[in-house]
Length: 265
Ligand code: NAD
Image (cartoon, rainbow, N blue to C red; front, side, top):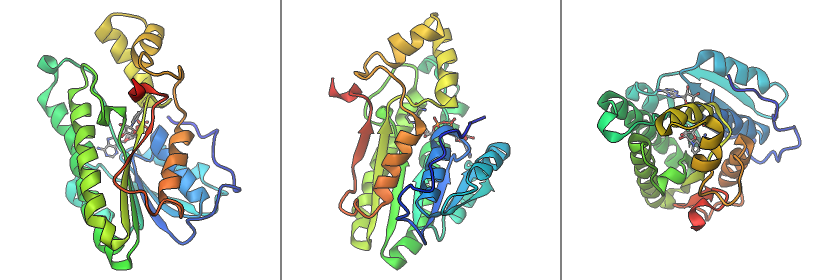
């Protein structure tokens, strides 16, 4: 389970007071950090995940923040429910995700389908559900947690790379349609972040490559990163807060890359 020892303090800029936000995958590492950061900025956050215990831990960690975190248990493969739950939010953070590392010829088609459903089709339905309210008030923020894998491929990650590349296109399309209505849409593209998703990948990649987890970290995951460390979830959350804040009204349709120099190659 995610630990919350880097909860943002009450001093975090309270520039989202009065805003509502919905963060998916909020029981996970990055989603939890985003929910807490937006709540620290004053937002009333609905934290969506299928992991009920993880959401309860997140809500408990939100105690003293300027805003609030309201847990909402939902499996995002229920696309109707996903679209419904997004109605009325001012800020939408599409973050939920999952990964399977397997060569294409061995990749289970049902898992490919689930990855695309959770990481591309659910964001489409959430955006679709959120836009009428955002357009109605002339203000909205959509932040899609993409990845370096929205811009680059890696072997054995066909579903994840396909979903993230699709999310990039969805985000840019939403940016073009939303601009006349005061709605921005952007991607945030981290390299490897210290979360349970990456910890699981270390083990999976070690099996796939036949090497130790330590060697997977230095020789596989961080091979192309100029900065040789994992990013922390709160660093990603800070980028999300910036895109939702008052200084980013002109920023739309971009991919904000936080990759330690990976794509500089
Ligand atoms: P995580 O595993 O810690 O969190 C993902 C969360 O999504 C989990 O809480 C999980 O329960 C939830 N989720 C998965 N399927 C769901 C479903 N069907 N319905 C509802 N919730 C569901 O992972 P994370 O590392 O925090 O990843 C969050 C996002 O950041 C993902 O989109 C991931 O692709 C992206 N990302 C992660 C990294 C990284 O290195 N960790 C790098 C780049 C991008």
